[in-house]
Amino acid sequence: MPMKIDAKLGLDVFKLDKEPHIVIDTEVCNTVCTDDACLYVCPADLYERDDQGRMTVNWEGCLECGTCLICCDPRALSWKYPGGPYGVQYRMS
Ligand code: SF4
Ligand code: SF4
Image (tube, rainbow, N blue to C red; front, side, top):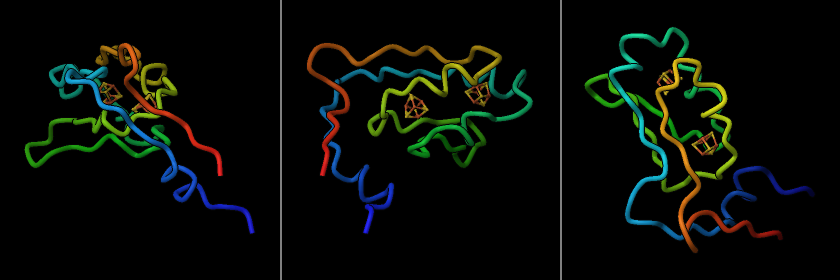
């Protein structure tokens, strides 16, 4: 039977940098954004609003696909690849 996506993603390994490679300008999110696109496009479901309604991203689990950057029309995201040896390491079953 083919593996489900959650099981496949569970095989990946993440080596975390000290600094986040994605930073959100939450002021832009709350004043300009009309669609919260990041909530719907991230394949790892890493975006969520906190108790105060601020958009957050759990960058530690980022798959480095860049989809959120492309879909954020108001340009609220500062996005770069993790430095050096950091970031996601894909594993195949
Ligand atoms: S799509 Fe961009 S501007 Fe809109 S909530 Fe997400 S990060 Fe903020
Ligand atoms: S780059 Fe891809 S996996 Fe990482 S936060 Fe953006 S949409 Fe999610």
